[in-house]
Length: 290
Image 1 (cartoon, rainbow, N blue to C red):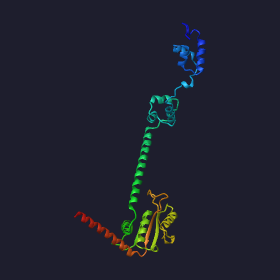
Image 2 (cartoon, one colour):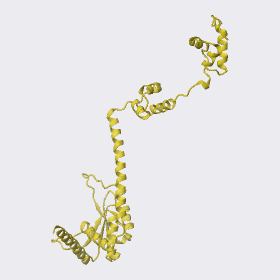
Image 3 (spheres, one colour):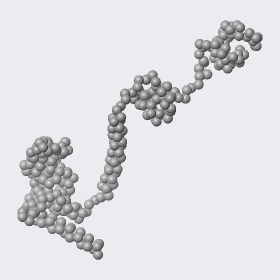
Image 4 (cartoon, rainbow, N blue to C red):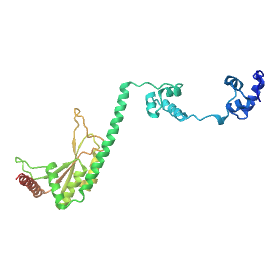
């Protein structure tokens, strides 16, 4: 149906038709073609206040980005941080979040400290992983020790950590002291290899007075599998208020002293074996140089 020269004269009647078609679910293009309206301004006036049907609404591809940007802004992120995270422009971010409160502005030095701490924590995690991997590989490479290997290890261990005679003070006493439980276990295994009876062993704890003395005594007794009657009186070190101690905490249990009764002959064997090791090394070095 064509409109005469004054085809828009009956505006209200034409509006009634346009509204009816709109409510039937027609699009603007369909209404324009149906009523032969070639003026967009007139069409806008005819449909003023009438919402478009749902099927004509196009989904907004940025809705998800907008929601995410608002979420990050509420968590205190800056425009720069949101832009890096979402890859959208700052102008879009500004439009999306402009009604939200601005995050508190952190002092630049504080931001630098936080960033530095995060980098350091990441670096420490990598180092710790490498450290554990290296330790595990080294432990697996040891395998089972032969009696000879354990013997040589024990001689070196004693000469490093055990009591030794001095030219001015010949005692020939076997006394070993250490705070490392693993060292204590290896030393006891070495004494077993040399067939030193456990009845010949005497133990003593040396510890700082501020530590859990009773707990430490029980710990060492359990580790060596000895009755408390095999322990001599604990040596307690007095506290020096001018000293800042680092050996504190639950893991601090002082040191354990192991003495072998009637150990003069054993001491001579240890000393002789050590000198034998030294001579062997010297001769090997001499052959390599030749």
